[in-house]
Amino acid sequence: MTNSLGIFFGPKTISLAETRGKELINAINIDRSNLVNAGLDEKVPEEIKLIALFKDEIRRNKIEAKEAGLALSGNDLIVRTFEMPLLAPHELKRAINFEVKKYIPFKLEDLVADSQIRTDKISRKNLILFVGIKKDVLNKYLTVLKQLDITLTSIEYSPFSVLRFAKMAGAGNWGTSAIVSAGLKEDEANFMILDNGFPLFSRDISLAEIVNTQNADPEAGKAAFLDKLKTELRFSFDFYRRKFPTKKIKKVFFLVNPDYHQELEPFMKEIGLTPHFIDISKYVGKPVPFNLGFIRSYSCSLFRAVNTSIRIDLLAVKKLMDRPKETTFAGEVATLVTETKIDPRAVTLSILIIAAAYGYSYYREMPLKKELARSMNERPEVSTVSPASSYEDLVSVGKRYKEKLVVLDKFVRKQLYFTELMNLVPKLMPEGVWLLELNFRQTNNNPELDLQCIAFSTDNEKGMKQANDFFINLKQNRDFIKLFKNLSIASIKQSEDNGLIITRFAISGRGA
Image (tube, rainbow, N blue to C red; front, side, top):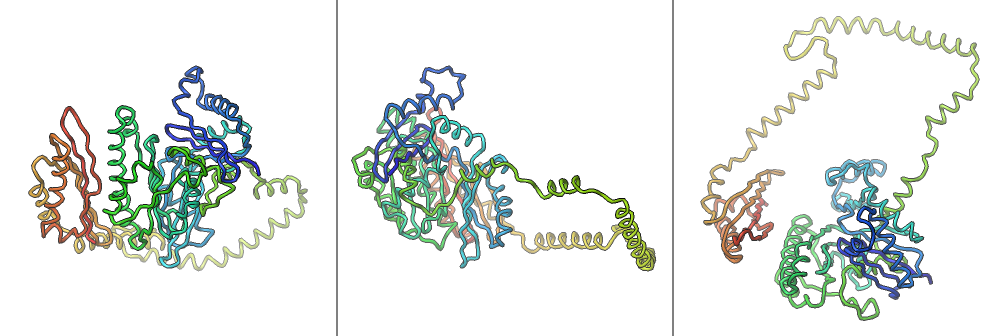
């Protein structure tokens, strides 16, 4: 049995795990700040520094693996899940490439991307999982591994790597389940919900500010980490329930430091879910301190030993894109023409046949053209239509007028007057709370309202109370709640500026 290597490139650390089957052979954690102190000139490219650092660690730890899986953080990848209607297979790929442009900040041509499709026959929709990476970012990692004489077998999103570990713990056998992986020493935590192993919803959570707090004050860092994690979990679960109301979560699995279990368990029960904490040492086979980077690299190294339902293969797409272009049909035709000898007699005969066919068709069309010209001359004059307009032009003009009539009809009959109702907002707003932004829209006759607010106070509790009082005032107002039946606090965040506590929060309302 050959050894396998899993490599995780995180925002703060690089983790390597060498395994034989599921047995852990080597575990290495490299602080990325060591790249700055590697004794190389600052102008040296990062790839060169990485190669030097890797070679040193591989030699020092006597790593024997010649094949590796690469796990990347959400900073390097674009991961999106969205729904599409059922389409014919030959139309679906083109439709995905068109639809995904709504969700990515780059040109599709700049990415190496792959997608996986799951069909829901009940709702008659396709659920699309799209993963992409910028070509220059991918080439950087490929350059590093090529210089290390290591064959790359897979490139994947690190939370997808963690699915192998979760599967060993039984998390893949519970229908609709959530997996939360978070560590205080990493900049990035992840929240993911799966339906029989297929990701319905995935979200990366930035912890950069918390990590800096941890370095200055460990206890304050721990408290800030837990507060941030609880807030983000509450927001993520609320968002998921709105997006997938019929898919109830059965289990929630946590990959977090055991020190946090005691505080997370009552919080999860408070929001109506039971947490299941995965014991890392039980599945690794030896006692190991909690390290999220290690879990991701170890899970990635199990690419031979444990399969998942994810079929995204960025490496295969990259190899296909790099393959030399095959001879096209146009090229084959050009070659055929250049190699064909032309007989002048055959050319003359062909021209005569074409001319005869054209002359006969012209003779047949003349009466029809005369009749058409007469009809056009007899058209009544209309200021908005030219007498020379074709049938297609007339259809186009008629279509534009119909569209305008539809818009006017919606404006007159279906518009929603809520000026009087919105006058309630400033009246219900507690002292010290200000409205930053108000967004109102109507989707499928369902009104939706988003309020972005800010509050100023002298302490954290007062800021939270101001936000809560405003929310309660809105919810208890009969006229307001009559239109927006579903009202919730979408987000809340506090910061400090010169001793003043600034509380930013958002309230969302939905008609149904």
